[in-house]
Length: 358
Image 1 (cartoon, rainbow, N blue to C red):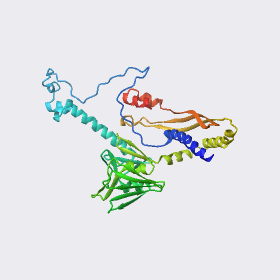
Image 2 (cartoon, rainbow, N blue to C red):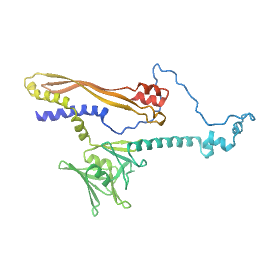
Image 3 (cartoon, one colour):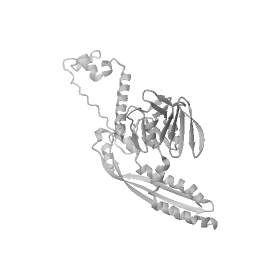
Image 4 (tube, rainbow, N blue to C red):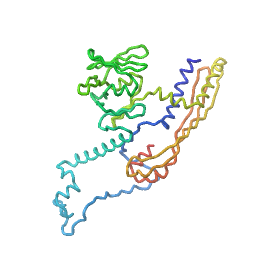
């Protein structure tokens, strides 16, 4: 019975708890800029508003001349190019100018988002451990051969692990309660020991010792996964998230006291049902309510902030019979209370795209 509970109960609880985590657990989330505007049935035609340039009024003294358009606006040639064709003023092509222009905007937005999350250096690959930003005061992470390498000591301290270094063998040993990972400087393999078993893994980039900072650099993914954690990489923002998934599920699962009691009741009677060749059916309805808050990222909409409500609801059926246990059902997450915000932003194509995706 205990073996059956371990085999079946944990996957069921894990699925449900992860569903709830989507609506309640804090995390790092960044939105990409949409590249198209969806068709909204019944919406009014989009009004195209011409940009407002701080330009001078055309001069009455000159006719427009394509070879000297600055005269028409009573400007010098330099003034005209600086305002209307800035790429010429910088002796660049139009394509190159606008490409750099928009890249600078995206870089600024990326930096603002990272700073808001808590990072102090936005020009390096950043690390998040269980939802918390990890900042580096000395040696910093870097990308080499397509892999993120991290100064081992800083990350291991944040993970509550230990670091050992053998200068003669040039080995770096990372150890936590349940696992040990041994790296060798310059080698593309590492040894991982878990549950008394040692295996050799391939590395995307070789570890190395940085003489300038006296820091041992090791591949982040190999280190984290060697400890049994999961790593998620956000390429747009160059952020690696290290998640102890088992601990997260256990933490959320602890809040499912009522639902877990119902599951326990089903398991308690499952043995009798199996022995008597009967099928037992238990229906479960689950509802959880949350507070929700909408705060736009873009500065021009900073005054549009609203409180709302979110509700997670599910209906499940637990079956116990000769074939074992099964759980079927449906669940959904609803967010309400932001009609005013959506109405205020309906003229903005990019914001409308983002809201429609939500």
